[in-house]
Image 1 (cartoon, rainbow, N blue to C red):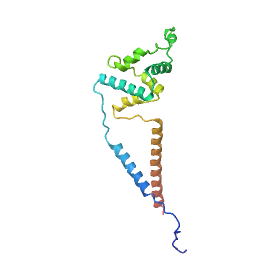
Image 2 (image 1 turned 45 degrees about the vertical axis):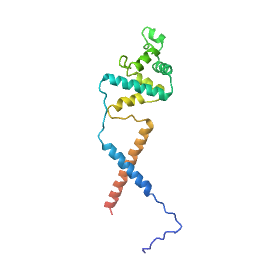
Image 3 (image 1 turned 60 degrees about the vertical axis):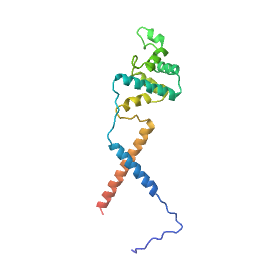
Image 4 (image 1 turned 60 degrees about the horizontal axis):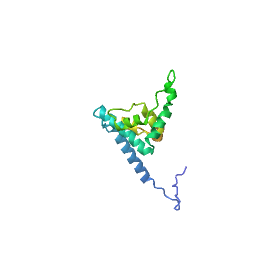
Length: 177
């Protein structure tokens, strides 16, 4: 067999991916560095501060959603299926509906009236915003990931697994020649 040099057509366009590869390597290095850094949490000093933080997170959620307190109250009652009839039934089917007065107390006087944690389920569902839950986990240095962010994380893990498999495949092929 002859060994001839392959001629490259001078009209063929040269594709330069060095910038994209360099960016990918830099982003990957930053992610790996961030993953190995210790987590700095900012725990609340006492339960009163925790109550204030949660109430503030709910207020931010209300502002971001554009809802009024009345709309939030109605949404919470609907989420839990609360009604006067259900609360007065024998046996009761639910608790009494949340009133605007009580919601105002939860949000304006959180030290006197701490909001029950189960209301966060309804607040997240009604507003579509996970700010109150994110505030709670942030105190321990954690973060809440949205469904989209989880999918992107899974894609990144898949890319990493594929890269490891390709490296292993190259190593195995190299050993058999």
